[in-house]
Image (cartoon, rainbow, N blue to C red; front, side, top):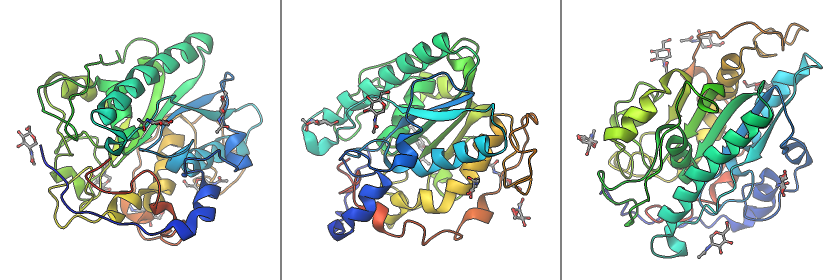
Length: 316
Ligand SMILES: *[C@@H]1O[C@H](CO)[C@@H](O)[C@H](O)[C@H]1NC(C)=O
Ligand SMILES: *[C@@H]1O[C@H](CO)[C@@H](O)[C@H](O)[C@H]1NC(C)=O
Ligand SMILES: *[C@@H]1O[C@H](CO)[C@@H](O)[C@H](O)[C@H]1NC(C)=O
Ligand SMILES: *[C@@H]1O[C@H](CO)[C@@H](O)[C@H](O)[C@H]1NC(C)=O
Ligand SMILES: *[C@@H]1O[C@H](CO)[C@@H](O)[C@H](O)[C@H]1NC(C)=O
Ligand SMILES: CC(=O)N[C@H]1CO[C@H](CO)[C@@H](O)[C@@H]1O
């Protein structure tokens, strides 16, 4: 399969305090606003987060789910929202031969198990699934099935097969929105990929056959972001630039948050100018607006988000 040949040295360790505050570093998260949302209680909207390789919990996806939950809960006291982390190691290939595949397989099976347990216990909850990088692959595996030998190796290893969810049965039927960023294993030309460049390229390994069929069933609730020049989700999009693997959140958190809020059947605080109607059920609306968010928030996390989980491209 395609190998990311460039080596990226990110000497951003001086920015660790900022990163720690964002809970991307592999140390306990100190951000109370994120930790408060970490729960297994029954909620109106409950997200499952699959972090990137070698990241801490909740990783790069924290600010997105915080934005979603703030919007959902700000206008209505009877709406509850939070997340749990998919409990998987997020080992990279740097951690040893075959470790990426073992880790991703654990994520795929554990993600389905957590979603199943949660929706059996909390049948009214609407589920959201988020993933970044290895976690993006894991999220796609959770939905459409993972592993297998047909498409070859991923970072030199073969991931064990795991089945797709059935979109007509719990927990698949409870998923209202899934958003993945910079997934490792993915295919070009998919209807759920936001058209900002990466849709023309396969990932590190493609996702064909039964995996593609499994995933296609979730198209109505799935949105995938893959940047051009991202060495992980679009390695053939030259020149590779690791920044393009890391800037999803500064670019797309706002529009992804709005989309999730709408898919969950609500109108966001923003969409209603913050009036008290926010949080009322409005039905799922269309609406996507990729360009609006691009460039708006470049400075929000700056390059600080770069260091963890993605140290060297081609070694994830
Ligand atoms: C999240 O909550 C679980 C229990 O639900 C706990 O085990 C875990 O340590 C928490 N994680 C963080 C980062 O707070
Ligand atoms: C895999 O990741 C976990 C953290 O999730 C870490 O504790 C463990 O040491 C890693 N395994 C290897 C072989 O590096
Ligand atoms: C993606 O991979 C599939 C399966 O190997 C291949 O048929 C297809 O041509 C590839 N597409 C691109 C754009 O590289
Ligand atoms: C609502 O979400 C938007 C992004 O869609 C975000 O910019 C805004 O800060 C959020 N508002 C609240 C109140 O959280
Ligand atoms: C995107 O949103 C902005 C601001 O809300 C709006 O001005 C613009 O027309 C929208 N573009 C599309 C394609 O919907
Ligand atoms: C992902 C997605 O649906 N993108 C669409 C957003 O809307 C524009 C037009 O407003 C379409 O061109 C995109 O394909």
